[in-house]
Image (cartoon, rainbow, N blue to C red; front, side, top):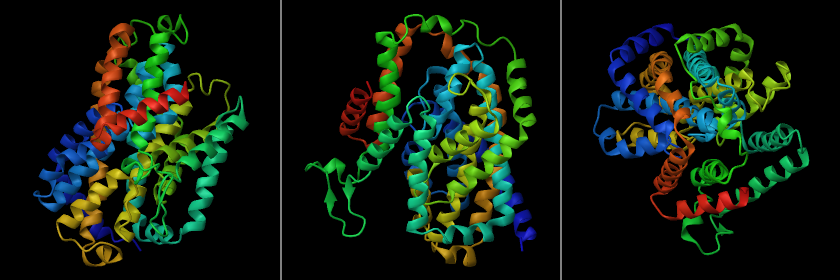
Length: 427
């Protein structure tokens, strides 16, 4: 039975921290727009300050940064076909296609609205059903996680409609690269080739930067399509009307919104899954329920589904953290570190001895998603100006930011090597 008294108290407590919530969302949004510089990088930089802040304020600030970064990652995905965060990979499929049709503002507003509404819906659901959702999360063991992984590989093959066999081979190759690092049972290093940098596995963020960001820059320079630059109109935004249309489109397609939100919530609860898996699954489901021949070329339903699930999974990601002390991603690992630094008892006992902590953190996401929608709406005109920058200036700027993001992910030059190597494989 939901404890509505505790929910009301947590909503009131988080409302007193609205200033920190707006600050966190803004920091996260800016961090997400830089390829490779995700919420985890921003929180690691802020970590020395966070450990000395009040525990509730620190946790509310971190979750706000998390929400803002997931939305911010869609900005470069839509404007220059480069995902700012791993969860924005599926947004590239149709977001960039909409931008080339002169609908960048519409795509960004759909992304903002679906992110805000998806996150808000799953946050409210999590507040009411937290004990039940925690029980569901406890039921997933190794076998269930393996099924999810295999489903993800089949999903890749399905999305590669032109050549499913090539998509399946790519998924299996990814599974093979995932074996690099320590054996989970004995801790013995595998396929590291003697490199200490690979003892923790192949760095995910630098690899994604190489596969998407650097590859896109090289195509931009080499001319994947000599007429491609002309496809993006010089004037992509005239008024707020396009942004308003995006919000209306999102609300009208409430079926896609609710379905993608639930997919994001459930996949977010699975340890090891993340925004990239949630957005891909939601995108695949959108292709089934909202059939169109424009998927992969500029279909608004694809942007809606991907971004909705991407932000919806945040609420689900916090459930295994509070129930099992199990970090879902690098960002949640930083949150776990701050919890430990403040001496809170982690695991199932946290829900028993300090229930106000998880409820206040999740309650703050209600205000964070509202702030996210407002801030994103205000920044859309500024974001769309990126499409007016000539390619000769845009390419070196994106390349510089990408290499900086690859370096910042692990604070070593090895990240740059992984990014460049990944780009060479993709090309």
